[in-house]
Amino acid sequence: MLFDAVLAAIVVALVAGGRLSRLAGLELRWTWVFVAAFALQFAIKLLGIRGWQPMAAAAPALHVFSYLLLFAALAANRRLWSLCFVALGVALNFTAIVANAGAMPVRSDLVRAAGQQRLLAAVEVGRFPTHRLLDEHTRLPWLADRYFLPPLPTRFPRSCVFSPGDVFITLGAVLLVLRGMGAFGWGQEGKEAGSSK
Image (cartoon, rainbow, N blue to C red; front, side):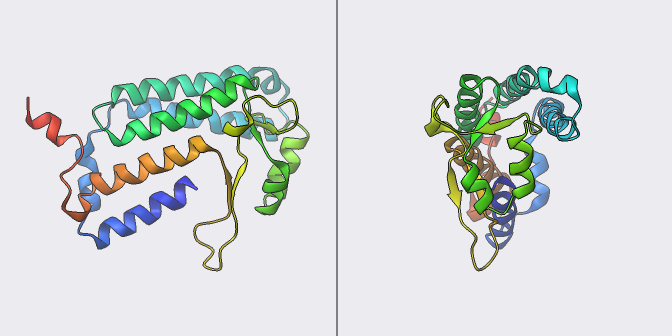
């Protein structure tokens, strides 16, 4: 969902007079913290799928820690108002994850409908430790991955299962790209605050 939306935003921005080179002007702070958070989440999933036993016990705490890293990086970039939407989305996902022992609940029928059978099989046997199946014991189920974008004739965006938090994260990322590239004649985000100093 996020990747497809950002790709579409880049195309729209280019058509609307934006330039990719302007993204460097955003001057994101603590980029290494963003990278570390996503790398940690990737490692949790990869090692979990490969059946590395120590990860089964450590995954919930590491998953929560990766979100704390994201909060720190987002706070360091709070001058970029588009990231406020991202922060809200991260907070919603974080709430669901903490309430469910470090894993995001997901509806099995929707994962299957999205054609992600391998992912579903991994979740069912506990080898995809960042997620768990949504059931009657799930806390805050309305914040879980329980919404569905069905397959479209255009095959873009791709079918996916998502949470309310994912919607805000995607919205913030799209706005960041559009404003960062200067689409539609918008002033570049973060420059207005800097020019007043």
